[in-house]
Amino acid sequence: MTRADAIARAREDFKSGAFLAELDRRVAFKTESQNPSRGAELRAYLEQEMQPAFAALDFASRIVESPSGKSPFLFAEHHESASAPTVLIYGHGDVVDGMEGEWREGRDPWRTTVAGTRLYGRGTADNKGQHSINMAALRAVRDARGGKLGFNAKFIVEMGEEIGSPDLGKVCDLNRDALKADLFMASDGPRLSADRPTLFLGCRGGIRIHLDVNLRDGGHHSGNWGGVLANPATILVNAISTLVDGRGRLQLDALKPPRLTNQIRSYLADVQVVPTQDEPALAENWGEEGLSAAERLYAWNTLEVLAMSSGNIEKPANAIPGHANAVLQLRFVVGTEVGGLIEAVRAHLVQKGFPMVEVRAAQSFAASRTDFDSPWIKWAADSVKETTGKPPAVLPNFGGSLPNDVFSEILGLPTIWVPHSYPGCSQHAPNEHILLPLTEEALTVMAGLFWDLGELPKPLT
Image 1: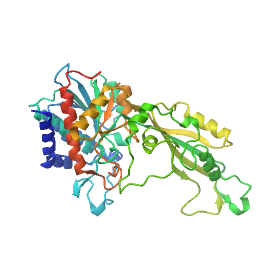
Image 2 (image 1 turned 120 degrees about the vertical axis):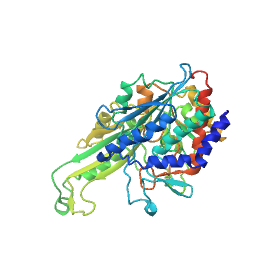
Image 3 (image 1 turned 180 degrees about the horizontal axis):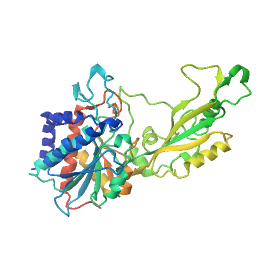
Image 4 (image 1 turned 90 degrees about the vertical axis):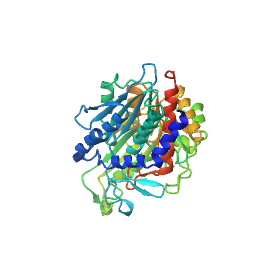
């Protein structure tokens, strides 16, 4: 049997409808981790769906309880040779709220529905469809090799990613030996575009910055007091403008990343950010000057105002409000010094004349990525190109956030993500979907990668 045979088997799994039927069965589990009443569904997905599926692939599996008593995990392992490479694969079976009744044409989020080239259903893109693709590709390679993979594989399935993976780091730290591997390779998030295979090496970090101006209790008549009482909303918007200007450009050096290297620029040189018809158009003259759209999105920091509040926007009174609040978020790349960030913002606002603005941080997560010199990057890119005929976009990091630091920092693994979705998939909204042509191609991409992994006589170093 050959590489082409493994790819053909993966393609036939799609064309026969077997893969789509498998995914439909998995979507039916209402695994909403943000819903406290779904605990039984979260466990059932692992015990009733995942464990039998891994057993069919000759993986031994076990449930690993969360240290905090929250969502459980599943560890699965297939071992063939001490000298063969070992890959650790990750997926999450939990989803966001199903949002029943909000889907187009009355679609049921807990069943897959085909419409044109789209397959709708909650979890199709995030993440049941993606880890199902990887499992199906393992099956195709195993069948092509007569019951062998040619490498060792470990799989961890999490059920709490949509609530911030609160126990993933601790579980991996406690199970370092069980999760020991040569490479981490998983799938989540979108490709650069539907027609461009993509690899990304990590993710940006994030930190929420709360700004509060509390001057007095209640509002005071704007006619009687206007011009003699400080307005917290006016103070707040002007304070924010000293951090990020009206074109989205960072004004405080502490918020900026290190200078872009030539190596990063070379990786992004052929990366074009082109929204589809269903996606918002890129803003003109927005963001850091002198950078391409790809560099702004994948290699630079952004400070976004997520929410603001002062007074009652629905029923505004003729009164000067007593309070104003805003929540900002800094998305940052590897190399950004965030340890003293809040203190730097606070000192900056004081220096700019805004000592009354209270500054605090919440909900932070780390930035991480694989070293650009890792030989696994070229190996993966070459494999994808051989399968598709298209050179993949290799991104330093995903624009959003994933628990990549758990695998790169705690477990110390080179991390490569191979996404099987696309930017317009509506993953956290009604009408979540995957594209059928992309899904078929993704199955072949992963079959090619897993076949090539089995051809390596030893791990890359």
